[in-house]
Image 1 (cartoon, one colour):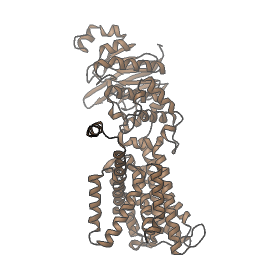
Image 2: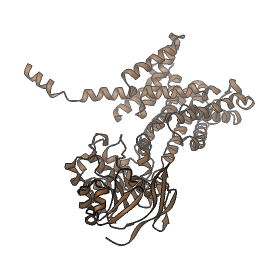
Image 3: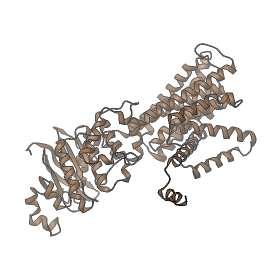
Image 4: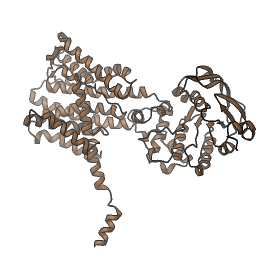
Length: 324
Length: 250
C-alpha cells in the first residue's frame, strides 16, 4: 500500500466519528475484529486457514474480564497487555501441537481446540458465568477513571493506534527473512528443509504472532462491549474472521481492516434495515467479492490502480494517431 | 584433487517393499573430485542421493561425514554441516523472485532472523547478487521463478544450494529437461561456479558427453549396487558398461 493512501485511510478513520454520528463504537468493534483478522491473515501467508482462532480472542477477552472482576476494573493498557500475552502463551501451547499438521487437518484441529474451550466456558459457570458470561468493568486509562462517553472516545483512538502499529509491524514482519520463510511454507516445504530451516518452527512463530493479534483484538472487544460470553470462542466467530480476511483480501495487511470495516458496516446497517435477511445480504456481498474481486477489496483497489497506470497499448495509440 | 575422503558410506541398505534400492553400498566421496553417478532408471542413484542428504533414513549402514555418522539425521542438520543439494525438478519458492529465492538461502545460512529487518536489507544481501552474477543470471534477478525456462530454473536451484556455502553438493540430473543445445553451456557455468566456490560435487547424469567433459570420476550404479568406478575414459569405454548401462552405444 502506498504511504499516502495508508495515511489518508488512517486520517479518514480518525475523523469518521466526527462525520458519521454514532459510529465510534462500530468503528472500535471493526478495528478490534480487524486485529484478530490480521492474525488469521498471518497464517494465510503460509497457506494455512485456521477455523479456531476465536480461541485466542476469547482467552484474551476473559483475561480482561477477570482482571476487571478481581482488581476493581483494572487498567486498560494492563488489560490489553495481559490479554495479548495470555493469548500468545496459549498460541505457543496449541501451536506446538497443530503446526505438525497442514491444510484441512490444521483448520479442523484449531476448530476442535476452540470448541473445547467454548465448552469449558459454558460448563464452568461458577468461574466463567456460563452462557451468561461475565460483565467487564470499565477500566481506568493511565490511572484516570472515565465516564462512558469520554472512555469510548479514548478507546476508539487506542484501537486505531493499535491497528496502525499492528499493520506497520506485521508488514515489516512479513517482509523479513522469517516472514518470507513463513510464506515459503505455502510453496515448498522441502526446499525450506534443505535450507536448514524448520517449517514447523517457522509456522509456530507465525502462529504465536497470530494468536497475540487475536488476543489484542479480543481484549479491546471485551472492553468495548463490556461483556464476555462463550460466544467469543464459538466456531462461527472463527469463521467470521476467515470471512472478513477473504472479503478484505488476504494478501495484504490493510485487507484485515478494510474487510472488517465493510463487514461491520454492512452487518450493522443490514440488520437495522433488513433484520430478517441480514445474513443473506452479507453472503451476497461475499459472493460478489469472490466473483469480481477474488483477491479481496484491497486486491480489487490495487488492480484498478494498476490498470489506470498501465500505458495505453500501441494499437490503441496508433489508432488515435491515425484518427487525428 | 585429493585423496582425502569427505564422505564414507559403509554398508548402506534400503528397501522399498521387495525392491532393493541400496544393497550394502560401500563408497567413498573424495574431496575436490567431481563424481558422476550413472546407471539405468531404477538403479538406486536418486535413492543414494536421498540417503546422503538426509531425506531418507537407511535401514542399515553408516554415512560418515566429518567423523560422525550422519545417516538419517535429516536435511536441516546436514545443511548446517555443509552438505547441500539441487534437485532433478528444481525446488524453488514459486511465489518469490529469483533474487528472493537466493536471499532466503543467504538468510538461512547466516541464521539471520531479526524479525523486522526486510529480506533485501539483511547483511549478506550482496552475496545473492554475487551468486547470480557467478551463474550469469543477474538479468533474471527480479523475475518470478515460475516464469523461467527449465534450464534457468536449474541454475537458480543450484544457486540456492551454493548460497548455503556447502562443502559437498549433490546434484540430481542437473541437465535433465534442458534443451540439448544448452546442456553444455549450463554445465560449464555450474562447473566454473563449483570451482570458484571450492565445492566438491556428486552428480547423477545420463548424458555420456556431459560425464566425459565434466566428471573427474565415474561410478556405475545398478540394482542398488556400485558396479564400476574409475575415470570417465576407463568407464565409458568399458565393454560391460557400454552393453549394460548405455544400451550398446557410446
